[in-house]
Image 1 (cartoon, rainbow, N blue to C red):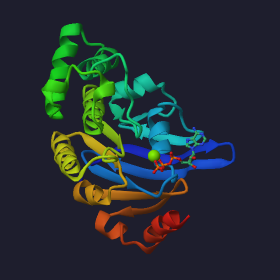
Image 2: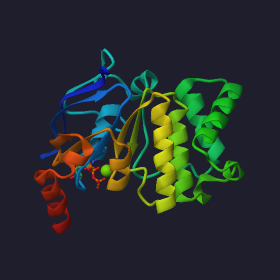
Image 3: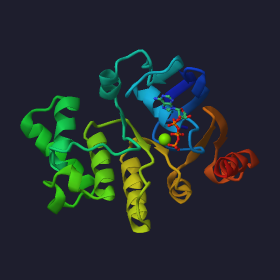
Image 4: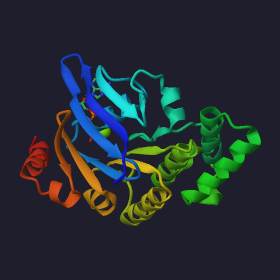
Length: 244
Ligand SMILES: Nc1ncnc2c1ncn2[C@@H]1O[C@H](COP(=O)(O)OP(=O)(O)OP(=O)(O)O)[C@@H](O)[C@H]1O
Ligand SMILES: [Mg+2]
């Protein structure tokens, strides 16, 4: 059985009186695709924030990556060790093209030369099947799907060991979600561990080997996705959230 690549221990993030992440403990196994579900406001994005320190760290607890504690490291060191994330709200750099956006990540994240960055950029744009005809368009003119591909390419160009994706399927059409499903399987098959936050349950259930569910910052359920999703406490948390 594969060992743990990440160990999250009693992780907490308080915003004043609100514990957005509340004493959370779980492991991520090397090479797995771990799904992360939970109703709106349950702390999923905050978990990614405090694990990567982008944009802020935890108020308590520990994150161990490989054999090192990373929760006291600055974000650039965490990224250099191999933890890369995408954002729920897709960022855009109005003055940059798609190609330049990925190249920027390669230059700043991996300190590559111009030639090295351009080669790595082409490789990753190709890997995510970004439409070459759109690679020099300003990011502001791209479609939602283009931007999702671009965010994933920008994360992959860092050569992460763990890729953390925050709702990559939001705003996508059915065929685009099918393409995303295939892309995630391809990335996982290349050996990259994936943590996938997603509300689109069909995608989660299709690709995740294990699922954790958060509720009010705490771990509500953990295990085989098909079993976890039928757990009465999980059903209640989702229905309760929808009724609110
Ligand atoms: N910077 C912040 N300052 C204050 N409160 C915050 C901040 N970021 C998040 N929160 C609060 O923390 C809680 C968890 O938010 P978070 O964005 O992590 O949820 P989520 O599970 O990602 O939700 P969604 O599924 O809607 O994306 C929410 O109550 C939110 O309002
Ligand atoms: Mg979120």
